[in-house]
Image (cartoon, rainbow, N blue to C red):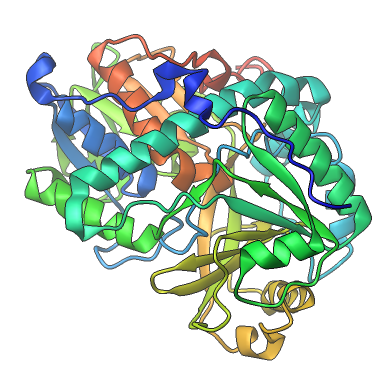
Length: 455
């Protein structure tokens, strides 16, 4: 195939200057005294809290897990991906998903259960998987990810020496067969049309850029605007930063409901009966946000999409940049703590035991692309699982509730939570502070499926 330079201009932000991260200083903002309770201390919740604190709000974060936790924000691949302009609900996903259901080691699984919410979610997802949905969503995803990349870099500067800045080496999609390479080249062309940079490469070029491990492939696509960072390091640094600045981070604080005054939320009630007063509430608790929203009269369909990962200490087999193994749907990311290898979208309850078949699938498919990563070595490593909140159309829910605009939902990011955490924080802060967001959020309205559900 050779080396095809399918490229946009060098600086994608040059076309969208509003996506650059501005210097936001508390002195330039009207100091607010309202208390905002953020439900959830994952990457989205902590980024929301950090943005609100910079606006001068009194912030309390409620997290149902213990302080020492290992949720979806910790063990993911750490990718920051402007190249991900195709939503999860897209044409071809359903057919591929059905084929994968027949393979016990495939990267996709649905654990059947008698659950009306799962059925409704699935039907809505199928209706959403259209070409028109992809066309409408792609520019918005581009804007969100580009903005979030800039904000990731700015956040790392604020956190200082506690965390390393994201590494902007791009992401390499590695294709094992010609069909996969042709399909990825089409996606790359679409990305370039949106102003992003992408290069379609031969197998030799892929091997040269990956630099470390042997790669078996027919070619690949290098998305140059992507980046990566260590999720665990960022989460720990962000948590410490918030506590140092006076945020009220509450652990083992499961939300049971809400107190209302005149039809509006005035407090958050914990499982033990304690009520935390609040002028504003942000629901950023992943899949649990659906239940909490329903208690307020809002239909926000979410399902748990579990991901699996292992982390390998592989100094000699360390790739120079993150890899996405196309047919396997596996990510391989070089991080400070080792090489993270992750994949799988398992629609199943978060508390379900680890399925060893999914781990074997990740390990075997990784070895097919990277023979230096032996499957028996990978399957012997400790397995992390994380419960990712998946929306009914593959796009996040971000905005206020109709019945009570003082309650904002920020959930449903699926596999994009780490990438979109900072921009979600900024947009929520804009909404809470009464500013008009620079990115149009109409397509992310939390109750966009309420009419279909007859609500």
